Every structure is written in C-alpha cells, then in structure tokens.
Length: 386
Ligand SMILES: [Zn+2]
Image (cartoon, rainbow, N blue to C red):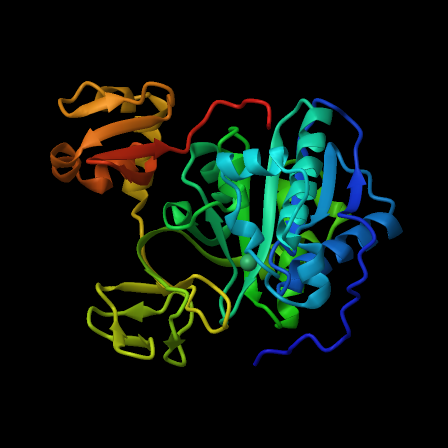
C-alpha cells in the first residue's frame, strides 16, 4: 500500500545549489540533481534529508559533493515543466543556441542556461573523476531502478547495486541531460526511485545517493545507516535493454490500460493502451517498462528484456580489447570523418550485422541520415565539459 507524501513540500528555492562541500581538487566529485522534472519532488526532498544529516552529524566527505535542483520554476509550481521538458534539451545544437541567445523567451531556456553553467563551473573547479546522479520518479508504481547510457564506466558503477539496470534508453530519447554529460566521458547514472507521490520514493533517493557515496569511497559505512540503505535497495540484480518504445504524438489521447507495473511480463498482441482512435497492442513478448499514467510525457511505454551475463561479459571483453575497431574494416562500414565515436553503415550491411551486433560493441545510438545509418558509441575518453 502506497503512503502518499502528506507533509506540505517546502517549495521555496533560494539557490540552484542546494548544498556543496568541496575539499580536494583531484578527488572524485559527485554531482546529484533532483527535480529536473518539477513534478518529481522526491529527489529534491531526498537530497535535503542528506544535507540535514551531513550538517547535523558534521560529516566530512572524502572528495567533493554537490546537490543541485533541476527545474526550479516547475518544481515551485509542482508541474513536470512549463514550456519544454528540461530533460530533453541537451544537444550540442541546443547548447549553442543557448550560449548565443541574447534573451530567453521560455522559462526552461533560463533554467537550462543556469544549470548548464553551474555544471560547467563545477567541472572547471575540480580535476578528478566527475560522477553525476540524476534523481527521478515515475507516474506508475515501480521498484527502484537505474538507467544508464551503455558505456563501460557507467556499467561498472551501476553493477555495484542490487537493483535492475536499464541500458540504452538514450537510443529512444532526444536530449536527456545524462547523455550529454556522458559525451564528455563522465560517469552518469539515472535513478528512478518509485511513484511521484509515494513517500518511500524520498527514502529510496536518500539511500541511493548515500550508497553511491559509499561505493565511491566518499563516506565511511559507519557514518551512515548503511545496513538499512543496503537492505532497502537489495532488490534484484540484472541488466535490461529496451526493445521498443511507444512514442506519443502531440494530439494523442493516450490512455494506458490500468494495472501495469514496471517489469511485468507482457505477450505479443496483448492489449496495453488506447489512443482515442484505436487499441494499442504489444508488438512483442517482453517486460513492460515505464507505462505512462500522467498527462505530460512523450513516451506511452517501453518494452524491455533481460540481458544475459554472457552477453554482458562478452561485450565488456570485446570493448576492452578494442575489437570494435575491426567493425570499420568490414565492407559497407566507414569511420565518420569528424566524429571518432561514430560508424557509418550502408543499409545492407546494417541489416546483415543487425543492431544487436552494434549494441554488443557499444554502438547504441542509431541515427538515419540520408540513406546511411550512423551508429554512435557511448564509451568516451574523458574531456573537459563544455
Ligand atoms: Zn523524471
């Protein structure tokens, strides 16, 4: 039974940086973001609890820690966003437009500009590893889970947790913040704590961030309620990949059939939703993922499947040995002239190798340009954040 958040949420925000503690320039820097979606208060409230603990127990963090608020105006209004989803605006072109703009027409442009500059300032200030955690909640009930772009450094931190890890969501979403950060080679992990208004989601966010700090050796186990947090987030170990996304048109009157929870089995042709005109049935067997039970959002639902340990080990070995370089030697595949992380394939070779092979080698993002398919890799060399 869900206990909903009943206490009035303090929505007064005086600063985008909720809290910061910095000591050593070349140590690990952890940046946690809550409320990039304004209707998801659990991340912000979880971070505030952590800050209370740090202050009241005078906890000294080994490294640098920043807690940030994402979409301040939407958080204050209790809505996902005002004009644009702040977690769909992070492309190189969007950032360029932002930097070149003389004034901002929309609220989210101002929010993004401030958040972008805050992250840039943090990354300039510290030389060590940067790790980003973005805290979210969902419109339907769910067990907590992690979402990451499929890079080996993201996988290695996520794999330290006993909660489901979903790979490759960036293949289907345009411009999430973490994918942008990932392009600079930094570890970036998304955490979905549970339902938006479930009181427990706050505790899950709190537990997750503390455990991230513990796993990065930034706090000692005995300074935090380690056993309680570890037990709370001991759910199920496993990596999943997204097989299908049901995207929504602006005019769509999408309505998910009731009762679908994350990671429940669905079979091909099973009725899942209605869109005002027709029935929407599952195109394949798999597990339902992030079914939409709110008005705002671009994705009706996803379908995921569990990846085998064999696949995960094989892909780690192949990528570590840089076997992906062999892909470039195949006829019909060429290197992108400017982007070293991109392979260009003609449709015939792409069909022959199938997307699965590209996934194995770490090329998850697929973009069709003219008659060619561009496959983009997520494993990156670390470069300064710009
Ligand atoms: Zn969200």
